[in-house]
Image 1 (cartoon, rainbow, N blue to C red):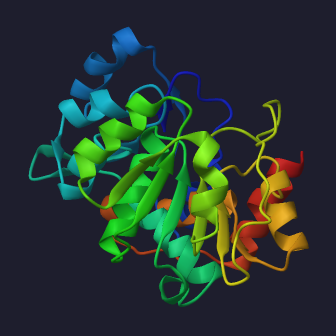
Image 2 (cartoon, helix red, strand yellow; image 1 turned 180 degrees about the vertical axis):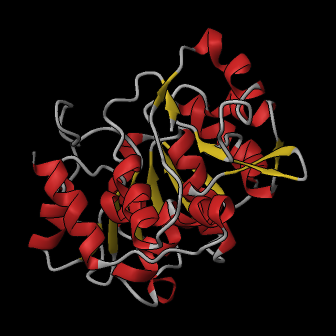
Length: 269
């Protein structure tokens, strides 16, 4: 995992768990690489003994430019997974399938509940979520952001499925939403809470939060208090790791309760 900073990443715990489980002669490490050193580091990735890498903030857009991106990475405008194929460095964005696979696991058949979705935030995580929703046939996605220009930029990127919405209009769009997704850092440990009233949401709505520290965010607690179905950020973290592992090692790992318990225990520490 390449980032700046990187000490907080739980990805080594996930991938090294799978490496041990499958008996592979491999290792997954953290690499703290400053932005000015990233291009050189990537150009020498294989020389350093790596068959690929994950990439996190602030390198995702640069990783896209330095590799051969697939359609998902192009759509999101950022790459989080790199791998070699016949000597060429390719990239994808597994946050897209990580989000939808987590919803599939947490709320099977969730698409049947969702004619319209509300996405809070307009950054890189929101782009991945939107890409996943469009792939699954959700074509009315209200993007709520305090900076209207960023929501408009998503409309320009993804087209008619995106409906930019001002924060003040949130209660109105929530009343029609089958899915609410928090793609901001609000509610994360050390960050301000997410100021939102869930009362307008229909009783069939699903609430997803990409934040995983704390495991139960105030948003998820409020949704569960209303008996709404939820999907947490830790599930997305686990599911987004699957395809990268498969691309590097040729084995498709499983997200299991034991793996989740190991990461939960680490978060608790």
